[in-house]
Image (cartoon, rainbow, N blue to C red; front, side):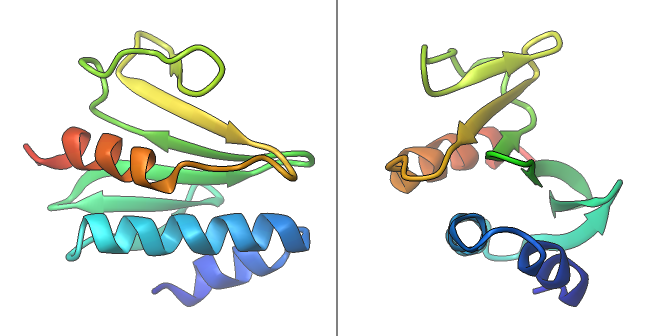
Length: 114
């Protein structure tokens, strides 16, 4: 785990810290050899030098974005497309239940070929 990422996470609100730590653990479990680093001011996760995911903390949410997701369908109210659809994101708000297993399945599918 990156100390820089830990410092980034620890600046957030308590509920956001909890979500971020669960996301970090899920990423490490899904991609055991993942590289975690702070890049462009946010935690980025790379597999074999390729972008896999990013966590972004905002005022009222935590966003988790996966790359290489062109073939992953959008899920209304859960997973939204960004740009040309190559990236997909989930926005997590305070008190919202999160299906970390579903996120892990999506991350695995988007990173298997990396």
